[in-house]
Length: 362
Ligand SMILES: Nc1ncnc2c1ncn2[C@@H]1O[C@H](COP(=O)(O)OP(=O)(O)OP(=O)(O)O)[C@@H](O)[C@H]1O
Figure 1 (spheres, rainbow, N blue to C red):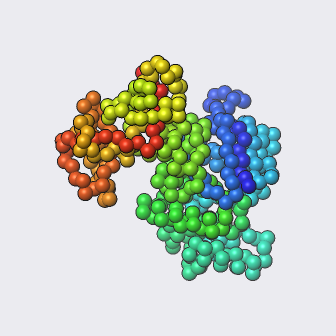
Figure 2: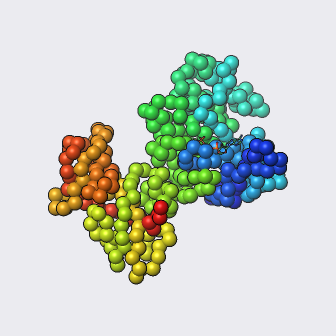
Figure 3: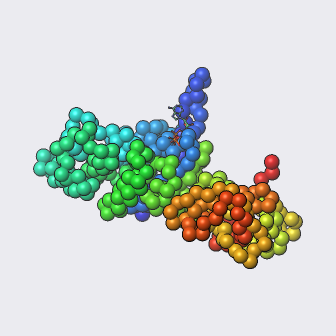
């Protein structure tokens, strides 16, 4: 069952120097999040992620569209349920704990309508959920960043929200802690069947945390999909370039093949060229997306790439390989294959999913 629905959402900010005029920073945005699903909004800085989150929370009005939570309309252009009546919890980047209150008092802050014993029981349940039962009497300044964020999560969940919004919750933490806490929070949310949306800049964090990811650019939602599909079946050139690593290699469609510098690649022309494909009997120039895991070391190949960069990453090494045309590809090889800078490596491509787009004209 759908929990959150955004229909044709548009939001803006007043433009400097003009009265009654707003610049739209989110436009025609549609998405549906099912009960118990965890989503991320991902996109370049300034693309409108936080504005969407603020609109859902009720801190930002709508210029067009509707927001629905289960069967309740939360907002449209003319009306809005106030934030405190939306049953939406929030976790912020800077934890936003009350510094003068103990951990226990922070967690029970929104529960003043309940009896003391109900408050204590929920507080105990929430603190054990985030594994902080032993720190209930401490104050925020006596906790690490990761512990403070756990308290913020416990506080948000104590109010039994219908939806949880997380605004870059892990970005103040170091990289290792970010990854482990993202997974830990995901497990807690799944265990409690909480529907949630997180905003982040960090793709790996989004991949680890979310069931579904919305890739935004310039106020628009380009693709709302699983991490696997975003990587293997990006629906636009923007998503293909933004998600994961990859390089576009020039190609030319010839019947059921695309001719590239790495040889002929078999393809189903109708499904592989996603944008602006022209008729099959004209020569069509395309850009083929080559991911680092598409490139293989192939002793039988006559095409070689010169190693001009390498980044060792433990189990694998990411190489930059220059083809004779000068195009530089990225290739991920197991790290026991240790090539030197300047070495020529015979290469071929092994595409699991061929992604190509009509060639961009300069
Ligand atoms: N109060 C404001 N007044 C005017 N413009 C604003 C205001 N807040 C944000 N904007 C603009 O709206 C656009 C979207 O901002 P938003 O904060 O939603 O982006 P974001 O994707 O969350 O960015 P980041 O990842 O950097 O936090 C940006 O161009 C920003 O400059």
